[in-house]
Length: 222
Image 1: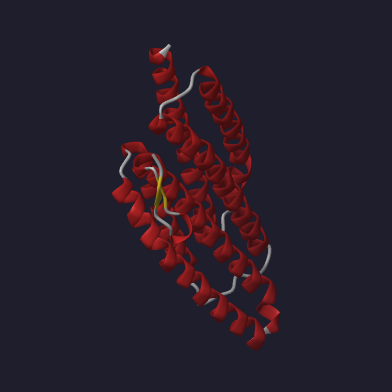
Image 2: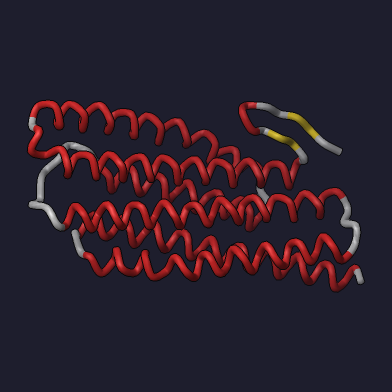
C-alpha cells in the first residue's frame, strides 16, 4: 500500500509540473502576442485554456484519491495540500494569460500607439518568477522559493509605475484612453500572475519546511 501511495505522489508531482509547463506556455504566448500584435498567439492562449482546466480537475481528483488511500505522514500530507493549492494558482495563471490575450486582441483592433511602458520586460520578470517557483517545487528547494518571494515587490513597483504613466497619458491625450487602459489591464494581469507565483513559492516552503510564511509570517508546524 505504501508503494502504491508513493507512486501516486510521484504521478501527482509529474502532472503538476506538466500543468506548470502549460501555464508557462500561456504566459509566453500572451507576451509574444503583445510584442508582435499577432492574433494567432492570442488564439493559442484561448484554445490552450481548456487543457489547463482539464489538468486542474485531473490533479484535484488524484490528490483527493491519495488523501483517501491512507493516512499520510506529515510531510506527505503537506505535499498533497501544497499541490492542491499550487494547482489552483496555476489555473488562475492560465486565466490571467487569457485576460492578457483578450486585451491584446482589443489593442490589435485599434491603431498602433506608442506608450512608454515596457510590458515585455515586466512579462519576462513575471515569467521568471513562475519558472523559479516551479523549479523550487521540482527540486523541493525552499531557498529558491524564498528568492521568488523577494521578486514580488519588483513587479508591484513596475505595475505602479505603469499605472502612473498610463493614467497621465490618458489625462493628456483622451483619444488614447482605450489603448492605454488595455495596457494598464495587461500590467495588472501580469502583477496578479506574480502574486500566484508568490503563492506557489509559499506553498513550497510550507511543504518542505512546514512553515507558513503567508502574510510575512513564519509559523512552523510539526
